[in-house]
Image (cartoon, rainbow, N blue to C red; front, side, top):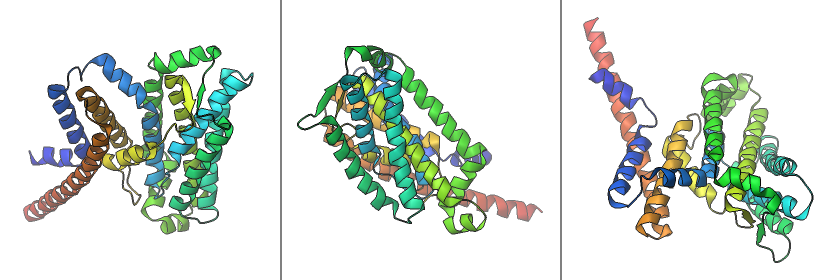
Length: 330
């Protein structure tokens, strides 16, 4: 029993998993049709962009950084995509590639300013947050807030709204991020930088290059998220992605990734997004105002952090007890 307890408590995602199961159980009882498979798949598609951003930000936060510009970059990439498809003769593949490229450029700018100029991540990404949102208005044009996709983009809308492709993309990206963090030397570099950047630099790790790659990946995730959001909505608005950064960062921290860096869990971040999606669906079915959902998400974050602290304390106590017992036996 003690060995099983140690194994259970060693799971980083345990707090968020318990909270998610509790929330789903509550809504299954009190919200009609909450567990309907088609409805759950719809909300999974709806939150595919959030999940992509959460996976990318898990890597960034693991390195001790932060990116609060991802929501605005999503909006910019969405507007770029819709503008190319509706105002030019660009084909769908080229428009999607350019949209992702814009996201990569935004992320690379963040990474370069942080790694090469030594600026604080919050300052740089806050600046990009305002810049990307402003550029979205410029690209859309004066007085334009919504750009509808043309009929030629019907296939993109079908893939985004009616197929399971967004969920497949999220699963693939999450699996790749997990493999990078747990199986590759680059993942070890990320964790080392988050744990102690100076020690990582002295050990020969190119900290600047790693950070540049991480923020570029976050930008690519925002670009891809902009494509998925535009496809599902059939339109792009200048306020697309507004507030995404709050939900995504909350989900990442709720999942067990340390805000100080050096510790990360991709699965926990995905479970955190699933928590936000469950609250959105449950409150929607119960007719509860969306403001309550944001408040509950904040409270659940505090609960998850408190449960994580208890988990670590109990695990440390059990480990100490086991060492004492084994030393006495010897």
